[in-house]
Length: 221
Image (cartoon, rainbow, N blue to C red; front, side, top):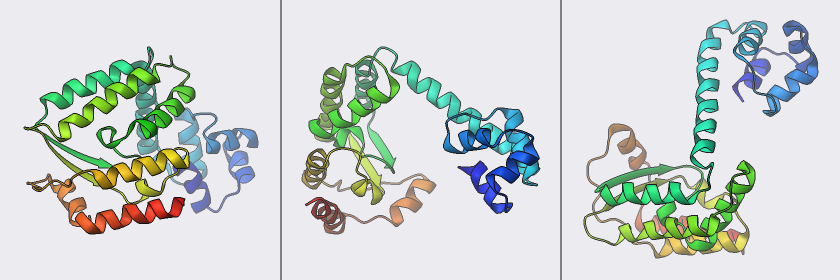
């Protein structure tokens, strides 16, 4: 968390920062753990205590953006996850070229049923939203057909760490990794946007990519 990094860069302990801010140390702990989102005033006070007033506005903007995304995510899932997945399918059906960069989990169209179910169950439990995981998974799995139907092209850049994250039970992860090994590699890379192209230049493909997936799979054995 950036606020915690600011405190450490300033050479302050939690108690010292709390004293400078004029609040109880427990508040500092709650903010650093993410248990209590800081207000705009809290962020300004924290930055001032760390002699980093110049970073306050950027941190406030970031905090507001994160809060907005969380609210939007909950709004979309307020009646469950099925509709969101179906809407995604409609979007993919109209899309001819889809460029995807992932750093946490494989994209939905690469997920087999077991992994998709485990992931969506975690999200549903965390958000406390209606459980329609079975229907949502069915909709997500349907999306994978666009990988094979004519007229659609997918270009995926995936961080190696995605292969290593324990985002589900070992059996579900094994199924995901084996599924990735079975996915055909795109034959044509095309012209990427500048940022995407830079990432693509660092990526591995074909046998090298499959070697990374197998290494991650072996680590689960």
